[in-house]
Image (cartoon, rainbow, N blue to C red; front, side):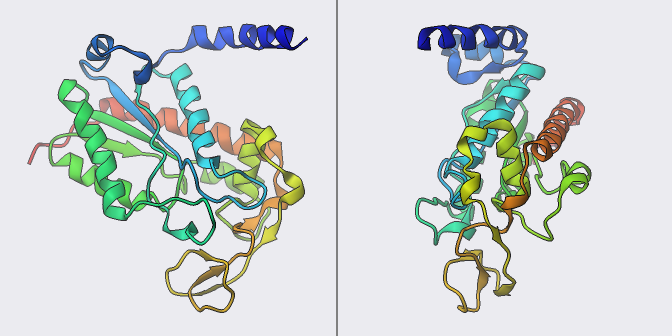
Length: 269
């Protein structure tokens, strides 16, 4: 029975593989990579935390799973070269929760710059980061500004704006942005086996002050107290809500990638 199920899974995946328009850089030899990177190719770089807290109901690799899903969708629909996923970046808000990893802002900026500068000499001058984070937006902006000095155009997903309209049609929680109703709904849609709704919770506390992230220490006067690591109401999550948001995000990413193809390159400084 197990062998039969494996065969059926592979067969079910064949149409998707046959329709794939993009190519994964890691699957190529260097000889093939030289050809793939030539010309006006757009290079996509997925970016999702490999280990960052997402409450008691979602796993530490939640953002990585999102990035991997978006990568598959983009590969299937767009003629791009997809580079390996970046799993470490700028996540200062979650360090009080075991397992969360974080790079300094300058390091996160330079990681992206160095990756792009490794690939751009072979042809591509347009790069798109499939971004799955919020705090990452600041160093990604800095990366783009630095790369523009050498005539390289880099764009990235702004998760706060790419599906705002669609998100507003399904959202019920009063506030929240992390491991919340929306993020949990997205995971119920793309990987329900990685969600434990029995541990989902509502966790919304006022910010106590300062610019700190989530904190497990109540009354410290900095950040937002969250004993669960959730900011929002994860209990309201449903697969249907996730479908609406995820499909809107995929459409937005594909639109931004196509717009990137025809956007003029910045002048070298």
